[in-house]
Every structure is written in structure tokens, then in C-alpha cells.
Image 1: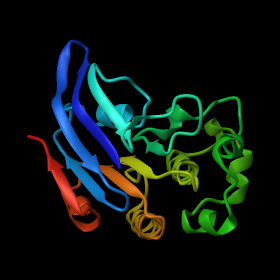
Image 2 (image 1 turned 90 degrees about the vertical axis):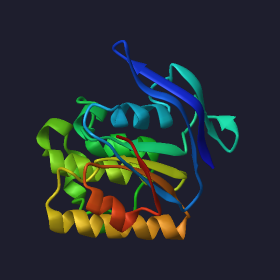
Image 3 (image 1 turned 45 degrees about the vertical axis):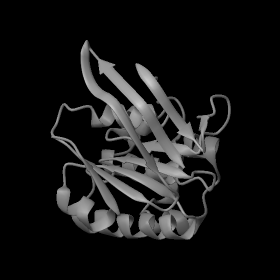
Length: 196
């Protein structure tokens, strides 16, 4: 179970989240719909261990997230281009996590030759798909999806979400889905956290 307890997140002198407590179980898909500027992206970063909260705890099965080994909570950020080392190929970055199979690449519309290129040689949509591939390492138990398909064409978005939902059911994989698209959240989430 991924949980946060009495979480407080401040950014730039502003309190974004105050005393937030909730949990996500394996296989559960929780959606967050909130206006821009409310700190959804920052919350995703904190839950994945990319950033420390101002106060409170993020726990995986009642323990702090691991710091010096693979973290089973993975974030696919809204701007994946910022998460790739510009001096390494996209494939090297994926292989830091795992060696993906061709079927997973096919289902995510990732062309094998993209993995030989540096991030600057790939489009935002191509990097978004590679970031999803990287995050779906078999050791991942919870996925934080921050507008993860926003850069993709609607038909590809639909196919990728269908595959990710299949992975969720088969593992089971818990997810926190952050999106401005309430229709998307209604389709894929088992419950919602609404913030006004």
C-alpha cells in the first residue's frame, strides 16, 4: 500500500497541500482533478520520492520509500524530456531500470531505433512513450501518472491507456492519475480525490 500521512507541501512560500492523508492499494486507480497551480505535479514528485515534503510521511507498506535502490513508486511526469540525461541514449536510461521486451515496446508504440537516440533527437511524444516504458519496470508497484499521455494523439492515448490498465490488472499495479481531463479520470479511475 502507498500512503501519505499528514502531508504538508509548501512551494515558494505557498502551502500547496495541508494535512493530506490517503492511501492507494495495489490495483487501485485514484484520480486527482484540480485546477492549475494547486500543486498536483509537486504532490506527484513527493509521492514518488523525487522531492521531500515539508512535513508528514510517504510510506510504502508502512515504511519510508527506499533511497538507495530501485523505488517501486515510479513517476511519469508531465514533461518527460526533463528526466532524460541529454548525454546518454534513451535506451541507456531505460536499461538503468530494466530491459524491456519487444511486446511492451510495441504496445506503447515505441520504435526500437528510438532507444539508440539521445533525447534531443526525439519528439516530446516519443519521449513520453519511452518514459512510460521506463516506469513500467516489473518491480514497479505504484505508478504516478502526471498528464502522462497529454503530448500524444488521441488514438495513441487510448491504446496506451488500454495497455497500462491491462498491466494494472495483471500485476496488480496501483496508480495515481493526475489530469485536467475529468472524462479520462472517470474512464480509468476506481475513485477520485477532488480538490477545489
